[in-house]
Amino acid sequence: MKNNKRPINVGIFDLLVFHWPITALASISHRVAGVGLFVGIALILYALQMSLASEESFNHLKSFMTSSPIGMIITIALLAALVFHFVAGIKHLLLDLGVGESLEGGTFAAKIVFLFSAVLILLAALWVIQS
Figure 1 (cartoon, rainbow, N blue to C red):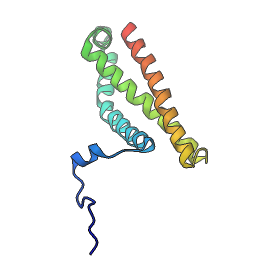
Figure 2 (cartoon, rainbow, N blue to C red):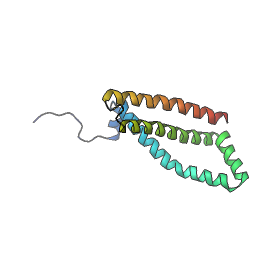
Figure 3 (cartoon, rainbow, N blue to C red):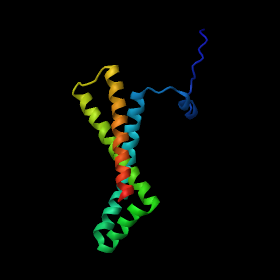
Figure 4 (spheres, rainbow, N blue to C red):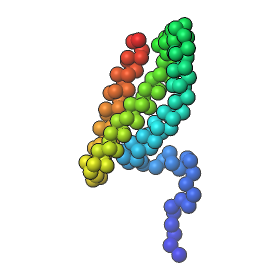
């Protein structure tokens, strides 16, 4: 019998030592951003309800989102999830059209997704902080 040293059961800590390719990181991050948006829909709908209730509740929500550190973090996190999910979604649409289906093309596309997303998230964070 062959002596195989591969793990039979992969635990959660084993996942931390794997070398993940950038394409896998982009795919997993796209899914995590989608889950974050799904969970964030409850907060977004609650904020919409508050903003439409009265002028006073709108002003309270606006001050919470722009001057409270917790509100700014929530706003930036939701914007970051939206931006990353959008940019990665465009990459997936291009892959569906046959653009970048090779390993090199997929790696380049994943790098572009991370680069564009980082720039757009930084701009969104600056916009929230300056408001």
